[in-house]
Length: 210
Length: 210
Image (cartoon, rainbow over all chains, first blue to last red; front, side):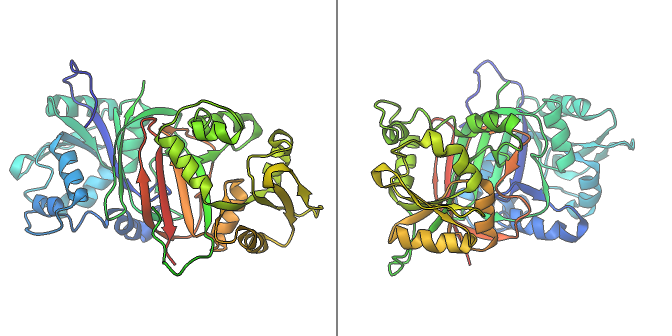
């Protein structure tokens, strides 16, 4: 579905985020973190594809589920922020659903951690460009996903390291919270796919035009 | 395409706006007004349906053009802000393309002005609820459109007078400017249509859930 130059076999860097219609992707404080999380990611947790990633049966096998599965099929490595890592490390468990190398952008050096099922955590202290370079090398011909936190995605956008934006927009206006796209410079885009679903979530992908 | 109760023959109040992907609908100053205007409304000016409204032939007869025409077919009255009116009055000319009663929300009382082709300008000084009431009465079974300025649309949203949001999202991130949806309260929505187009503009309509 993504138009790509036939000769371009290198991996794309994708920022993939779920937001409200007003672009809110995260809480501004711990107090509203879960409210925002549930409002913009609520559509995910009943999907058959999401449940399968968690090792669970059942769930809804609908267009949302197929969009989620298609996005994840293409991912060969991820980049996450340190705060997201610290928050997620315990719940992600011994066999995390990444099933791919994860690069953690941080100021604190740590030894690489290997988990079951292909997930590893590598700590990168040399900044976003180094994290992208290492993640691309690990991903090979697959893509690199930045799905949070917001700061990592914003750093990658500001450094012009992002090739695609993949947004999942829930049918709600939240009115407050933190946006991915806030005080960025101008970014020209080309829409590469738009998928509607009975849930009312809009799945839209854009290529960054350089 | 809009699901509506069969018994509901009264007019809906629609906020219809063109924005960037980061939700920017207008400049923050006169300096960036035209940059934003061209970035978020550039898709309109070559449409066959838009040109026909201006009394011009030709233009592109594509999905964007049909979406534009469908939206305008349903409109029996409009509400605009005073600043938009002052800005537009001269260029809109003697036979404005509204072809419907226009209610101007203002603090300065003025006599009603009648133009050719069904357009009239009525100045409402009693606030947004009064403007909506008068516009609904004028629209009959057709809908009321609020297409700007932002302040009028925001006042209508805050007063819970809006039934539908109709957004036209251009494939660009602007990074700065004024948003329609900023510091609103939470608004729950139901998506009623999603239309893609070769231009990459996303046309999405939502019903406000009360």
